[in-house]
Image (cartoon, rainbow, N blue to C red; front, side, top):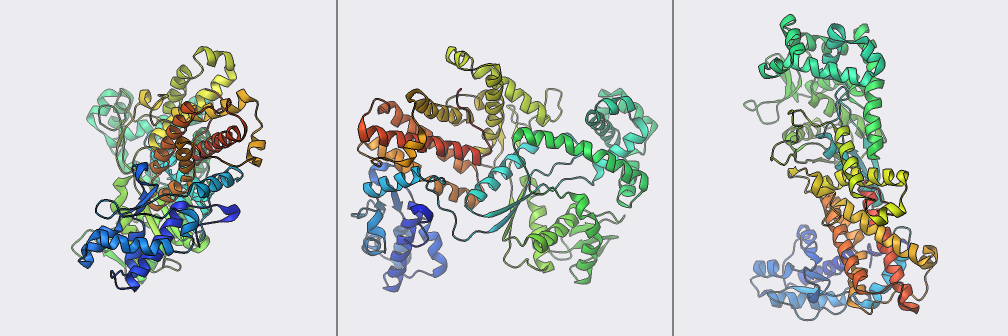
Length: 619
């Protein structure tokens, strides 16, 4: 079918079936059975989904009910008309069994032909893309994620943007899109004013020489307390209290130091240049542990020279004007608060930088879509920025999809934002360290683990499993909701956890290791794939749904769709493996089951890799 089969015979069965349904629905409308507008077709076609119960078939279409209601007809009658046209759709009969009669109020259930399923799996076994076709129309997609303030230590709040953005970028690349990742660092804001003020008033030169990162972090935390002047914080920190008493105008002075930096003050610029490599080195080290990389790291400082022109252009075009000394873009009329782009004191704001960044990206990267993976609390900000950008009418904005990929908060088991016992935000590196330490106590601790691993192996496995657990626990959540962080749950070897998924990969590896089997021989093929047992067929069908899962992730930027599917695949494989002999089978049956095992292991490994999660040979 057109648009469903790619290189090497790769096929997306759901897309092929949806294309057949599209043809059927177009015929239904053309023949006057039901009036269907062209704009309605995509939504109706998307109602072709996997069945919840395999006894009813592999896929089901549910659109007959809605069409019947609109046309004033019985759902079953409309379903019959769809089925008649469905069977005649080009290519349908090559892949699918005849649908049979509608079920219930008008469900159209379809089963994949066993021979078509077996052939598709055999091709996937020999395919480096595991049977997943690349998109026919690749887009240029910019993924803006992580974006920490570099003068502050990274904390647990940064984990969500970082791992969600990285997973989306990996998945979109594998799907065939041209992906550009950008870490829009906060490297120009008030946090540097705090460090500059602290450097001038309370630095420890010896401490800076011994550990620059730790000293800059100390200065930031100390000056933040002094500038905020919260009684409870000062009461708990005598050093901060003394500084606050000596410098009652510290908050104003911090802003002055920030302004001097922005205005090009030689001393502050020199200090900024001295501090930046230290700050960048710290966050880059954490990214290395997370195996996260970026194509570009263009922070706020990169766009700072463009901000004045951005404001001037918006004013010149009549989109922005003065209000109480500040400059704002009035998107909701005079009575609603504007989107401020310059303060009364002349300072620029996040919105100014975001607008300048959009214009620069459009000019230099010509994207079709820009994803901003940022906390859901910034939803209103991005709504206003996107609307302002479109009204601005900058070159290339027409048709570009600007998307805020929002996410919820990481909570502690008390249901509040995750904090240390002292009430501080949990540092990201401390979080990673604890995950690895806990993983070390779980993996390689049994007799089999001790016999098969040396100390270096155990350290590698602990690092892979511990960090993988933290990532997977985040990615397996619906990104728009808050979730409770629990090491105990995320390191379990059962349930929907990274450790369970990694263990499933290790089980597959164990088959080939114990059997001394060359997997390249398996992939070169033999007698093909046999699906004589229902458990073999169920596994084969699940394996071919890899591409469907990735398609659904892209549709709504939700990596948890992939984690859920991988968990289902691992469960399906477990049922197959526990019920059917692999190494003790003979002849073509043995070769077929080995091929299913090999493809399962490779897809699980690739799926975890697309989530940024490593795998190991033994656990």
